[in-house]
Image (tube, rainbow, N blue to C red; front, side, top):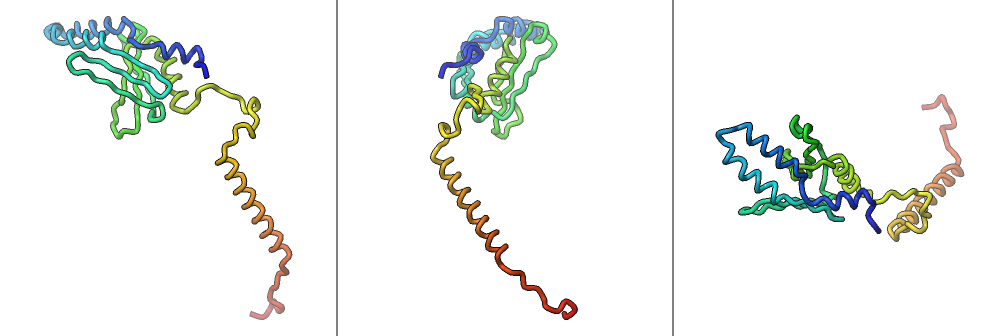
Length: 185
């Protein structure tokens, strides 16, 4: 199965957009006395940040001294949010927050510095729901897609329907014996 052009474009994303470094610089300039201490971690975070979209999940890694990597399977994704502040919107950036059922209220993974944030969100939603390539039901005969479990379930349901039919016919054939004297209690 070949990936769709949309999926191929998402799989090609490996780094944040260069405007993310502009955003980091503007955020650090907001605190002039702390600028030298804030810009270095932001610089290294930007230059080491990598994304990887695979058929099974998504991963993000960053860091020099302490390398950090987060990997999430599409099946574990519970919710996806887009978030951007005024400066990020001005630069055309947004963050994609991916949440799992880990019990933590914060996002498990935050993809930063994306210009294609809506396409990434739609891609992740389609993967978390298990939709890879849309196939119309009329294109695929039911017999070709049936699994042994489907055949077993069908046979069991037919047996239950047959037994219910026999029970109904037996009840209809049985005469109803009510009290002979309706006034007698």
